Length: 162
Image (cartoon, rainbow, N blue to C red):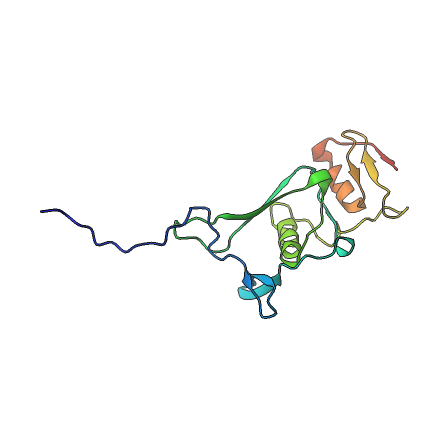
């Protein structure tokens, strides 16, 4: 007699599949539903025109932002939904969900950075001008992010403006 196993079947997915992928919103554009303070909120994935995007600065150029799904998938894993890099220490979110995730990533207790203070170019000579680190030569257009970059614990000192 052959033994059989009557186990429930599970839909075939990879361990890295997003358990809550984007879906179409009421207006037909793609949205991602994300819980904010325990309540589901629809964030548009429609692209923000490049000229209208906020630019955020992070004091560690090349750092990685990994955004994980809020729900575990069928394998019990919270897969990474999106990865971004702080190229040149700055990032310009392309849609409303990325804006929310960038701000939340900056506010995380391990970083504790006020996103409003590191948003935009604050050089007194205006956009396009930067503060440059005397140690690593990093160009930064935001004074608050530059001050964080040169905290005593980093050992970075010196500055010039361009």
